Length: 234
Image (tube, rainbow, N blue to C red; front, side, top):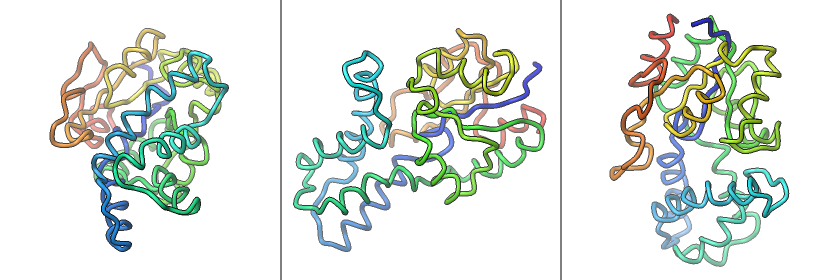
């Protein structure tokens, strides 16, 4: 493989969105004596992620970045799980929890190894401000930030993957997508990108039923970011 750049899915692949949100929001709620089902809310919030982007992809909504989609989903879901009576400032702080997600323990060390040899960037459905905040807070060593907001297309729209290749002035075969999600990798592979799968078997919690193993003929299959770096020769 003549791979020059590696693009990374972020939510689930690089950062632990579920564990981060449940821990942070649980502590915040406990300090305020709130009786909120935080795991239920976080799981439902994530469950609204793909449908909300789908409305944009189908043209039912104008271009709307992920922060705004998350905020709308939070407002709809919060009462169902016991989160009521909060100020707009509180709700905005909760929504920006997605900016504060923690990496998996192996992510930053593995990315630092890879960065010695490859151009590294997220290719996330998150927006620029979200990804920049996360990178600065957590030390994610990106060379640049590419995401759906740059191309005004959510994955798996081809414009997102091919737009990243165009901006990097590389052929798709010189670019790899690394993800913990088989559907993301399949979309990239169909467009000629190389593919790397990292298993994140606890991303969705103890009852995870998807992406437990590679679901396609991916170029690299790894158990974590360190294993992936090693298989890429870094």
